[in-house]
Length: 454
Ligand code: PHE
Figure (tube, protein in one colour):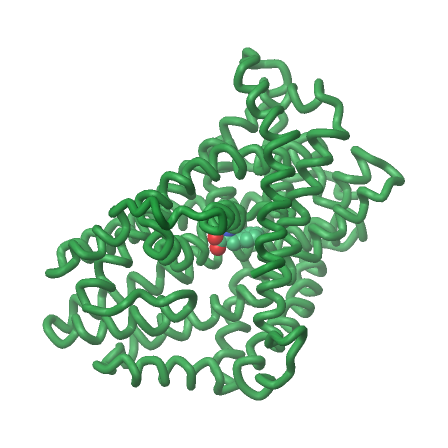
C-alpha cells in the first residue's frame, strides 16, 4: 500500500484534470461530425440531455467510488465489497483504459507527425486525392508512425512519473487553459473565412426528422466516450480529490467544460471545412486528410497564416490527446503501486512496455499487419471497437449498478454534502438517485444492444 496518497490542490484543479481526461480526440473530430450528420441543432439538444440525464449520473457514480475509497479501481472494489466478484470490475477497469491508451497513442503519434510536418514542409497538396494518399502512405509505412507512437507514449510516461501533483496536475493546469485559448483562436479564424456560414448552418440547422432511436443511442454513446466513462479514469482521478470536496460540483464543472469544448471545436472545424468547399468526412480522416487539404488551400492565398493555424491546430490535438492519455496511464500506475507495491517509476516503465507493444501492433495493423484480422477487424479496429463499444459501456453499467443498488444510500448521500459540511439538497439527490438506479442502467443496455446490432 502506498504510504502517502497524493491529492489535487483544490476543486478547480480537480475539474481541470478531469476535464483534461474528458476533452480529447472525441471532442475534436467525433462530436462535430456527428452533429452535422445527425440533425444539427436537434442533435445538440439531445446530446445536452444525454450529458445531463445519463452521463452526469454515471460520472458521479464512478467518481463517488473513487472519492469514497481514495483508492484506484481494484483497491476501491476491495474496500467497498471485499472478497466478492466486484473485484472483477476493479480489474476490468484497469485493462480497459490500457487498451484504449495503446491505440489512442497511435493516433496521438500521427498528430505529432502532422505537427512536425506543419512546422517543416507544411501542407501543399492542393488536391484531396493526393492528401488522402499521403495520409494512407504515412500511416502504413511502418517506421515513422512507430517512432511517433513511441514519442507520444514517452511524453505520457514523463508526465505520469512526475506524480499526481507535480506531473498530472501541473500539466493539466498549464495545458487546459491553453487548449481553450487555442481552440477559440482557431474558431475565430475559421469563422472569418469566406463561405464559412454554410458550416455554421450545418451545425445549427435543426433537422428533427433525423432524430431516430439510433441517433439518440449515438448521442448517448458519444457522451459516454467523451466523458471517459466506465474506463476507471474518472474513478482514479476522483480518488485524488480531497475528502471535503463536493463531487456534484466537480462533476457539473467537468461536464460543462467538456460540452463547451466540443461545441467550440464544432465551430472551429466545420466552418473551415465548408469554406474549403468539401464534404465533411468521418473519423481520423477529418483531422488528417480534410484539414491538411484546407491548410494547403488557404495556404495558396496567404501562406504564413495558414501555416500558423496548422501548427496551432496540431498543437491543440496533441495536447488534448496527451491530457486524456495520461489519465488512462495513471489508472494502470495506481494499480501497480497500490496493489503490487511497485515504485511509481517501475510502474510507469511496466505500463510503458505493455501499452507500447500493443500500440505497436495497432500501428502496424495499418501496414505490414493489415491482413491480421480479429473478428473481421484489424488489430487497431478491434481494440477501438472492443473498448469504446463494449468494455466502457459494460464498466459503466457495473458502476451504476454498484453505486445504485449495492452501496449504502447514506454513504452516497454524503458525497453530495462534501462529507456533511455542506447543506443537503433533497430534490437534486432524489433526481440523481432515480436517474442512477432506473434510467442509467436501461439507457446503457440500449446503447449496448445498438452497438451490438451495428
Ligand atoms: N474522453 C476522451 C476523448 O474524448 C477519451 C477517453 C476515453 C479518455 C476513456 C479516457 C478514458 O477523447
